[in-house]
Length: 246
Image (cartoon, rainbow, N blue to C red):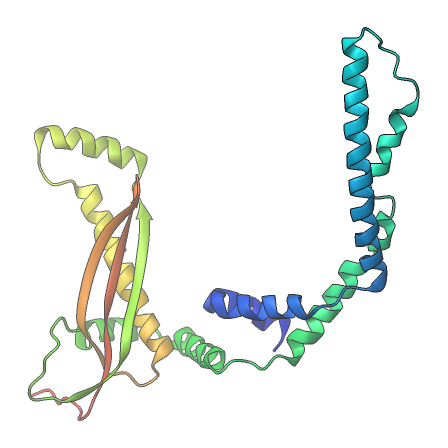
């Protein structure tokens, strides 16, 4: 697997990509100098923490007693800082090389190759073919007594659009006198059309030889104060025998 393919995998299947990423990070072993620096940092942290508490207590006692001369011992608190920070230089570059090497050793998952083939099919489909699928291959019913079919799997897609602020003002005025709100009707029609098209492209991507999408349902929901989602879902099928138009 290439690093570019892993980036695409994050978009396709985030959970799978996260498992790979965590596995590589857990198997990585830090260099000895970094382990040494971590140990020294921890020791200095506790030493510096104790010194700082002591200094603050002394400052408080001196302040309450009216003595405000603290001398030159403030610099001792600097021991709490990591004076070995330079040991970390180059560790990130070392990790990046290790990460790239492990990614190249990883096999490409089967579903990723299928997704790439599907993306190639989506890139080739034309608007004319999409319109043809809309007219002849989309059905809301799920029962075809004269035509047996095989289910391929569920297909879904959604489209989210925000309402224009001026449209909201116009709509609020329109609600006073009543009537159709044309701006909202247009927005929802466009959102539904985009969701249906996205569902078709999803079917093309997942199933190379599907014949139709049946049992189509459309749902809407508000996901924000001024944004709505339209989801379209159905079942991709393949006819066991071709439908012939009379």
